[in-house]
Image (cartoon, rainbow, N blue to C red):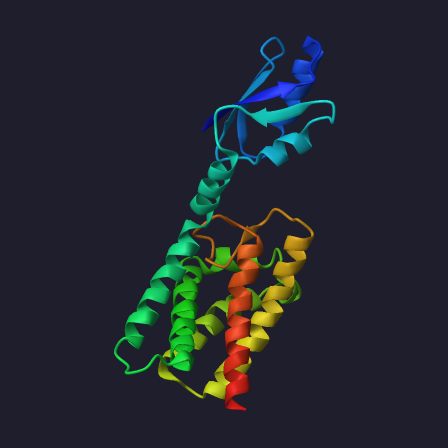
Length: 237
């Protein structure tokens, strides 16, 4: 995609070069054309780059602003394109969970959470199994346990598969939820560290199949499993 921005603060041709070089260093930008006379910068990018990121790349004397596109709409579209696989997975799991509850006389929240978690772990483990080595290598980049014990990445994928089957069969609910709470809590520590440190690394939640950036979406994903397993544990104790 290509966007043209208004760019003020340039006073000479050296300013043009300085701005162009600064913007070309921003991730996902493939080409930049700058005009001092028209006070514009035409930027071509692989995917939408936030206006704030462009401004941060420039010296404070240069001010960049949009001309003919809606920044909020572009950011929303870019977010959905990036996280479309996770959004669709959660939609389908939620749909199946809801349809199962239609067969009951009353909505059973505990059963719904059990089925949702079964679908979650089975689907996410499936994508990890497609390239188990790739997942393990990506997982080592941020997981606190996998960094110390590399084989943990391989084990983790099979634990997710086992948890999915256990929730589906309602096998030893107390044990299954306890394992979920412990495993997902360990997992979210590395995710939190990466997001808080603003590390730009690939999230391994869907294995190495999709190139998903580490973000708050990953925290929500892990946090949801932690909260659900904790609720079910408290209910059973």
